[in-house]
Each structure stands twice: as structure tokens, then as C-alpha cells.
Image (cartoon, rainbow, N blue to C red; front, side):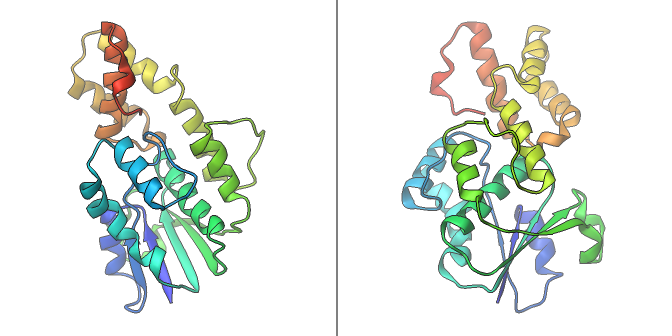
Length: 238
């Protein structure tokens, strides 16, 4: 049995029409760059922390994310194929999945396909793949603990594929109070730009981060609260 894990619902639908009928397909519906995490990946404690971080109730989070993970958590597969693009958002989600497979002592084959962002324009599955890696899972859980639990970026280099190394560098910048994105948002708020214009500018100017409206709105509110003299601690981060 093969499990294909897509980076979201749109790719999941695309793969459903392209993969062999005997392969399972699921989407990883998460935003691991947002808020906090938990050491016991995909445990009940993890899910509660994630729901709180995303500022949604547990039932809604369960319907969006937990139910989709059922195949990964409760079935056995000889091979897992990961389908993710190279931006920071996807790479930090991907780190979480690799860390879970490492943590759970998964013994099968793990193949990563780095894909085109505009995958839907291609009829053939092979044409959406930019690069493929066979993943050795050893060490990914330790990296996850560094990056997503402790927010420590002290290692000089991570022995992972280049897209994840770059994703970690971007995530380090992204979580900084003086990140390039937050500095840009801060400047536009001071210039009286509208929230809608700011979101559009950030999406277009920083595609390597892969963040959308939700995350930009969080950053916008953090910066606006600082400028207005409010305490931003009541908002989910990033």
C-alpha cells in the first residue's frame, strides 16, 4: 500500500485523478508556521495546542485536520509519498510530517516530490515534479524539537534537503520581531495603507514564504497593536 500526502486540498483533488486507484491520498491541512506546537506529534495534546494556535475551536480543527490524518495514523503503508512545494509554509509542514515518521519509527520508504506551484496546469503527474528525494528520516524529530518546540536555530547546517534548509532559514526570519515581512507591514501601516492592500503586497513581494491572507492578517494585527500601544499577547502569533 502507498499513501500520498498532499500539501492541501487542491493538490489532493488533483492527485485523486492522477494516482493509481489502489493508492491512498490525504491532505495535510495545517499551518505549522502559526503559533505553538507539542513534542508528541499528532497526539491529543498536539491537536489541542494546534487548535488554540490557529484560534479555532477543537471541533472545527478536528473536521479540517484530524480526520484527514486518519489514514496516516491508523493504517500501515510500505511507502509514503510526500507532495510539497518549496516555500517556507510547505517546508515547515513537511518537517512536521517527517518528524512524525521519525518519531513513530516508520520503517517504509519515504519519497518527497518537490512540485510546481501551478501544478493544476499540467495534465501529466510527472510534469509537476521539479525534484525528488528519498528521505532518510533519522534526525528529523530532533530538528522539529529545535525549530518548532524550542525555537532554537543554533545549528550551523541541517543535514536535510536544500529546500528544507532554506525553509528553516526563512522560518527563523519569519518568527523574528524584525523580520523583513513584519518590517514591510509596519512601514505600510505607518503609511496608512489599507489591510487589503498590505495583504496583496506581501503575497506578491514574498512568495518564498508561501503565507496567505490568514497569516498576514495575524502579522498585521501584531504590528498594528504595537503601533497603537496595545498588548499583542492576546493574539495567536504569526
